[in-house]
Length: 421
Image (cartoon, rainbow, N blue to C red; front, side, top):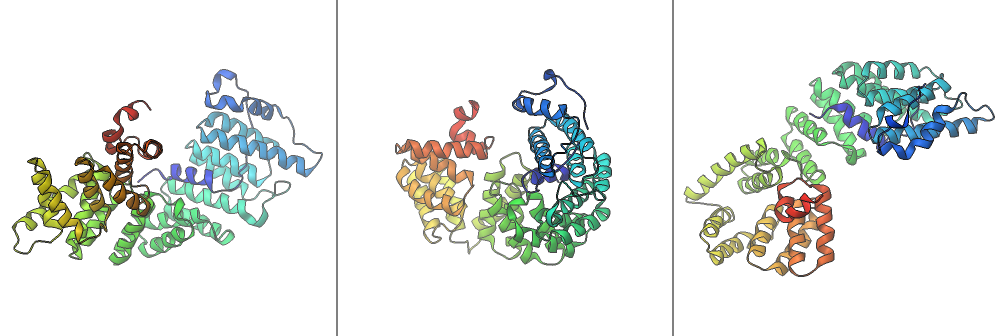
C-alpha cells in the first residue's frame, strides 16, 4: 500500500482548513529552491517578525494567516526546510495557540518526523483558541485527525482509533477521518468496522479516496462474506480510477465465479490494456484469458460474442481485413457496444481500415460514458486528426498527456510528443 502519510498530506492540503505553527532561524538566498524564490520576500518578512502584533486580535489573526498560507505553499512544492523554519517561528510568536501547534505538527509530519509531530500536536490540544479562533471545533478535529494519521504511519493502528473517533464526534462530516478509520480497522482485521467506515467515507466524498482505499474496502467486504458488495466497490473504483491497474482483474475473478464468462473476459482484456505488459495483473489476466479462449475454441457451445472476438485476430494476422471486420461486426452487433473493451476493439478495427468517421461516431459516445479511459481518448484524438479536426485532436492529446504521459497508449499514438514533454 502507498505510504499513508503521503496520502494524508495530499488530502489535508486540499481538504483541511487553515493550519498553524512557529520558531525559526535565518537562511540565505542560496538555501531556497528556484520554486520557493517566488515567496522570498514573504519569507524574509515573516522571519523578521520579533513579536506578536498587539494592536488588535484581528491583526494577530491576519499575521498568522500569512504564516499559514506561505507555509502550506512551501510544503506543496516540497520546500519543507524553510516551511519548518517558518512554522517554528510562528509557534514561538504564538506559543499557546492550538492552531500554531497544529501547523507545526503538520509540517513535521510532512518531513517524516513523526515522533515530534505527535508530541507537538498532542500538546496543542490543550492550547488556547484566542485570538486564533477555532469555530465549531474544526481545527481541534483536524489535530485529532492528524494524530490518527501519524499513528497509522507508525503502524499503531489501535492507538489511532480513539483520536479519529473523537475527531468524528467534533466534525462528523470529516471524510478523511472516516477513510483513516477504515484503514486502521482494516489493518486490525476488523472487517465489518472497516467496510462501514469506508462506505460512509465514499458516500461523503469519493474524490478523497485513493485506489488503496477502494482495494481495502473491497477486501473487507469480501472478508465479511459479501462478494456482491466487493464487486460493487470494484465497479465504483473503476469509475473513479479508470486507468488504475488491478481493479478490472479482480472484478473479472468475481464475474467468473458467477459464470459471467463473457463479462470476465472483457475485464481481463481491458486489464491488460490498462496495466500494460509489465504488470503482474497483466500476467495473471493473460493466463485467465488463455484458459477462456481454449474452452471457447473447443466447446460445442461457444459464446456467440466471444468466439468471433477470439477468432478475429487470427484473420487480422493473415491480412484478411474483410473477414476480420465481419467477425467483429458479428461480435458487436448483438451487444450494442455495451462494454468499453468492445468499443476499443471495434474502433481500432475501423481506424486500421481507414474509416475514422465511423470510429469517431463510436468513440465520442464511449468517451462520454467512460471519462478518463485514456485508451479510448487516444484513439479518438487519432481519429479527429485523420479527418482534419485539428483543434479537437490537439485538445484530447493534451488531456491524454496530462492524465497518462507514460502509458503505452500515449507512446503508441503520440510518441514524438511524449518525448518532447
